[in-house]
Length: 228
Image (cartoon, rainbow, N blue to C red):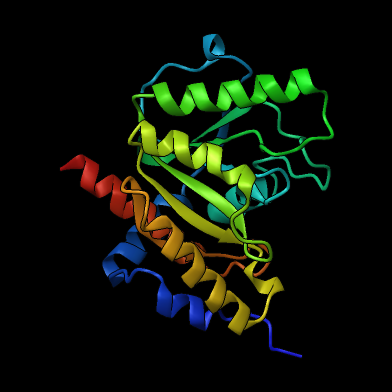
């Protein structure tokens, strides 16, 4: 049996490099208090655009809430569930340095009522197209399954709206090192065809904490660039 990833050594070699200063900036950025701000089920109920927003999108049950909890070091900041489709609103969390994280409804979940799926889908796409404070969208992909047809619609919307976005692989501790390396290269090859997509990706595991240091550093780098 192939060895599964625990230290993410292969992932680290394939991710973008960050300086010690950026790693430390990321640690500080996420070491402060994080709190629930609001939840929006429609464009009319979105909170005011007062700070840069980092949104997390992905298929249902890909691990968005778990990733946000691991990223912020809060076990229950975002609600997690094994039931796909649990998050049905855009959920906003506020942190230090005027940064907001957004947990988006999962897409691609067909077991819910068609009317609900349509409403979630419309909300997601309208938010991605029209949010001026949206600094970047991290599109979460389950490392075990890779890119799926359900991801194409979100990626197309992000490309058309020229919204900066990057792939984050989740649950990377659940596949072998060789399979992870192969998955990373396949996704990077696909994403090179999308000009608005960030060229690198970040491989993570919310369970082990692997990749969180790099993700925090990436967000800290983005915030620093926007402040210039």
